[in-house]
Image (cartoon, rainbow, N blue to C red; front, side):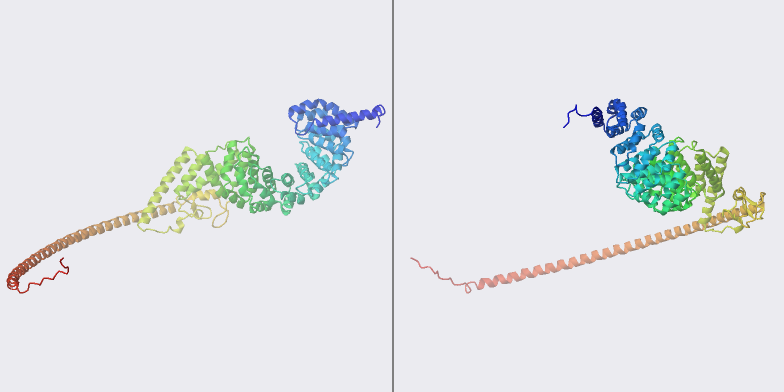
Amino acid sequence: MRSSRQVPLAERVALTLERHAKELCELTNRRMSADEREAVALAIPILVQLLKGGHGASAAALAIDHLAVDSAANQNAIREAGAIAPLVVLLQAGAGSEAATKAAGAMWSLAYSNDTNRTAIREAGAIAPLVALLQAGAGSEAATIAAGALCNLANSTDTSNRNAICEAGAIVPLVVLLQAGAGSEAATYAAGALQNLAYSNDTNKNAICEAGAIAPLVVLLQAGAGSEAATCAAGALCCLANSTDTNQNAIREAGAIAPLVALLQAGAGSEAATIAAGALCCLADSNDTNKNAIREAGAIAPLVAMLQAGAGSEAATYAASAMWSLADSNDTNRNAIREAGAIAPLVALLQAGAGSEAATDAARALQNLSDIPTCSHAILAALADAATPLDAFPHLQRKLRSVATERLQRTEAGEDAAALEAALAMATAMGTTDEAMTARVHLRLVELRTAATRRARRESVGLNVALPADFTCPITYDKMKDPVVASDGHSYERSAIEEVLRGPHPLSPLTRATLGTALVPNLNLRRRIEEHEAELDRMAEQMAARMAGVAAEAEEKAAAAMAAAKAEAEAAKAEAKAEAEAAMAAMAAAKAEAEAEIEALRQQLKAKKRGRAGEEGEDEDDEEGQRAPKRRASSRRSS
């Protein structure tokens, strides 16, 4: 072994630097506390010098990686100390170099949530060597870490990094890494990189799809909500589907919808479920085929469950956004969403106000749902129950006020008092009524209740007369109360035909001819209807009076019959009682007679017994000496 004096000075310096680099590296790790990172940060200039010297560069790169983790101050200090350029040089050594691998890791940590560093790394020329490292494949640690570094570099508010990475040819090797499957970190980081590259960049989206990324991304979804690879794949598919019909269809055809719906089952607390909701939202956007496929795959129920997490939850926000897309121009989905119970939690999200993304998306979803009466009525009822103000959502407020007003006008023209009362309550809750309208509706309620009483009276006497056909409005099929003649020569209820005339191209409901705006009151028809009603009321009163008289007469006859029957019953009862008493007396006399006969017989028997007893006593005295029995001799001898 050579002594220290025999070793050349340059070599000794190199060995010393390498030893110091390793010692500094040993002082650091990715789990250091903030205080520990601050203490070791004093060594950053030394570590940068070690990077430049070559000796100990690998250990220095690893130490810089550790110091940059979750510390914006250290990230900036490392950049300002000039570390990025020598790290880029280390990358040039290729995937077989430990130094290149450690340098890629340092780039990863330096680029995390730091746009200034991302830009500096790109400008230093790091992207091309990082892309070159990807070529080593999923079995290479260097390629895996390079994919993670590119993922962070692409996650920038500046599109320059995404464009530069795409232009450097990263997309194809990243897609190749996906083939390693969900168990591979390389595939996970590649999916994350592709997600960031596709974000708001149509050129990159097209390039990623053309490179064949969709199929392996769908395969990664199968790993389930517990897999980071599945979460990143869902995010990538979400970005690829955003505002691109071709990609939306390709993703559906690759079978992505079912596994995305399966991810929703993990609930609002799962990042995978949250991102899957976002992906389904993008897939459903303006794509009727996908909307139906998502509904048929069972997505609506778990999306409704995610709404329950509240406005502070990103999952609820994405779920509300998905409802917005699914309900757009699709009545089947609208009814399915209503039936799944989505309206109440969507209304609850509105409480967070216009500053909440969840509340804004919920308002948009409710606005799409309100395009059909079944949903709009349910929304109005939910708003009335929750007393939710809509001032923060003027578009939804205007839509629902219009719906509430139209419903009130329609029910006011109808014959259902309960429906009119409910419509008035909803219109009042929406603030669409004034004192005059409220008073008018209350008068109409009195009319309807009076009419209901009249109908009940007629029905009670069996006066069920069908309404003449010409008294019925051809639009509402109800009895007209204010008939008017339109330009087609037919009579209609005024409010119903006025609603038709408010349309853009008013056509006759009966002839389909274009209608003029003139309406002439049909006073003759109105009089006939009123006379018909009055006649029915008169007949009902007469029949009721007649029935009341018949009933009273029948009641009197029944009372007389009951009284006669009662008197007859009482007479029969008295007669029966007398007969019973006579029978009892006869029985008592017979009994007394029998007892007398028995007593006489008893006396006769006693007399006979006394006579027989006297005769037997005399005979016994005469024969006593002759019939005395002999004594038996004693069997014992005397002594």
